[in-house]
Image (cartoon, rainbow, N blue to C red; front, top):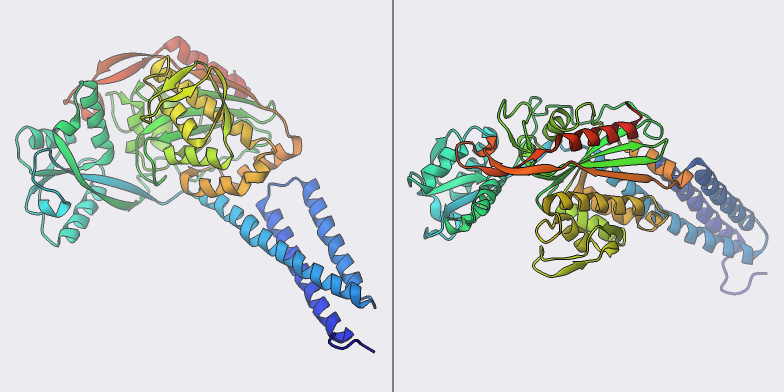
Length: 506
């Protein structure tokens, strides 16, 4: 005879069986997602399957028993375990899978930003004030994006624009500043930054002459002829065995990773997963090179190569392969920006980074001290360490070395057991601030390999030295000389030799 207020045993068992069924469903979902994620070694997957299967059979044995207490315990346990597995599956594992897909899916669009510029003493205070002006534009560089920006401006003003098109930015700038042919100009943000840099190198300030009244951003689709190389990687390698090469591009802006921008960081990383050796090679952003398919016989700064590509790094890669690291073929690329670095390091809980010197940086406007030796760095401090080139001893070349040390710090943290506690946080930051053509299955294969062997990696770094001089650059030919770096040939050959040695080549 059952006690008053208690469910009949039959109903209690039905509820218990429903709980056990939910436990089975969510166990299957969780195990399937873990397998699909692909980062756990087979032994760990076996253990997960064994544990969830064991818990399931214990729940079944309890729920079919004759003890009301055991049935009740089994019901509560099944419901709680189902809730746990559901949260693990849909809050952690599935988002991780989706985020991996996000960062390894090459975008088919790119973002171009155009500044609306007037003279410093112009009375205009908002973009709408220039709708009656003659507006200068440059028509030779990405004409479709410029036209879309103009169309957007005309639609915003609800007014037909008076446009004067020039063959190049030099002619447009001279007509605007010197001749007064136009009251305003539409200038792609990267070119504005190049001109700004030129004025700075002349001990002047571009803001003494012009004001940026506003911006207009346009999203453009890639066309087949714009993608110099296929952006999706077609590399057929077993990355857990075969050596491979990665180009790391750090663009000089914050915000969207998909925007067109100069590449301030240009690092070649040779990885040998068999010998556990990584060689990182860097060259200054101002290195004087020919840009394949762009400059012809003329030269330009390496950093400018990226603005002639879109977001797939192909132009920068070709420039490095043909001008700097001959004989080294890049397999994959990674693209990050200033936002990426800071957020990724914070998601990792900080990193340990070696500084060759003790010095105080004033890059951020604040005094930030770095001691000689290992420094524990937050994302903000790692960003300053990577960008400072004025107060750091050694200037621009040392900045390149510091960037390599930050990458080493990030890699060491990612390959340590600590990554397991911040895996989703890191992927969450990567999904919006990181882009690569490394296939998802190659990333997960490397992660699985590292979890299986837990090996330490041997790092080697080398920076290609340059001698600075002033010379003309293709990007602003006929306007003025910029500070450029001519590579030290012996140093360049040494870098090639070290990269090839890591790859197991002669």
